Image: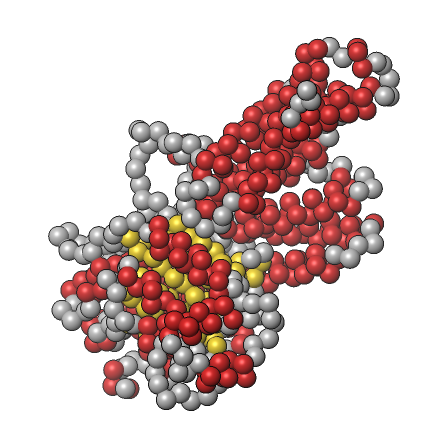
Length: 595
């Protein structure tokens, strides 16, 4: 009986490869049995690895358990394949005709595995492993001979490798490497479009434009004495979050899951990552560690003697999702949320406003934020007619039609998820619509961005999100500074850490603060975000430019102003920071008297 199809497939490839190699001279029978077995085993591992890698596309993107064993098997096969080609390189070169670009393709697949494992686990150490394999491809010039072959599909593989490598370097803040890669990619694209009359020239040029804009999105440069740019990291360091005072009683909730959603029109982005998404995901991660010394192989059980440490919260990165996609991921996170854990929802999206006045003030009457659909243009008339014709409809029929047919996320859509601890951040021109979503859950906090956003500011990322990610850079930006020397930057960072510590004390010593904030205060990430939110709000209230209410972020439950954002002690700190930077003139001295 014939062997199973998959077995026959790799055996057929093996026999074909051997015949091709022998066709130039010598007889197939002259191949020693051991070398024949080496080629057979390599073809089997190569075929198996491709099957498993292609199967990754069929795994659900949501949920945290279903995919782990499959990833483990895929890593196992690629580990064996990589070691096998290293151990038998000479035989594979002579008998199989193994080319360097094929070795590079295996390394590239392993790099992709580590990157996708990072996306699914949010463990930043896997980014280092992806970088190691991508960097090895470049250092060993695995793709160097591709341009000599008249095969455009191989050149495209090389271009895609560069694009993936750039994404990993951006996430690791290796901006010097990014700039080198962009230059190399530009040269490769120019050569590719010159040699082949392809239709994807515009697309690859757009990739270059996107990454160039992404690199330049930060509004302030930190410079060394020789005017080289200092690369700063905004991930949580060991001493990043203010410590809790001894004996302080706070909630035991920890941030377990986060949905980071980006759907801003015309915002700078690269791959499927907008600037706002990039900044928020880094605010919810710890600094990467060396994976080889800290962790075992992905998908495998960790050793019992591994030192324990807090993990990063699991994140879903959703770029321009449809409503149904967003709701599916949200429901999956809600379902798998462990006990005593928090789900964070970050919405960076274009506002969708109601088109007519409504007699009621329900959770669907003030608009919401944009979600994606197959239609490219919002039909305002259709939304208005929907609001009028469905006004008297039973609520669940209306909700069903809303979910299936329309492309905006309203505050009422989040109500089913307030049964568990929920932390909501809305960065949108219509963030005020979510005021009505402040119905109390077990523990719930909702932050709303300022609604007055300039076009240029929104394209390069939101100022509100920048404050949550890098408060010092945001402070410099609103102060009119575009560059700073490293020594002064480090001095200001140290002073800002003191401000964060004092803000934390203001919160914990307050007698009128809502207990919801203290429920979240035990988590390092949320504690740091909370101190940055208060610093942002206090800065904007003291700044001479931001004089309207719509320029200030809002919080629900509301913070006690006199004890937090308008506290004289905090205002003194902000003025002192402004004095260090010699920009005190852009702030009011006696802010409270100006209200």
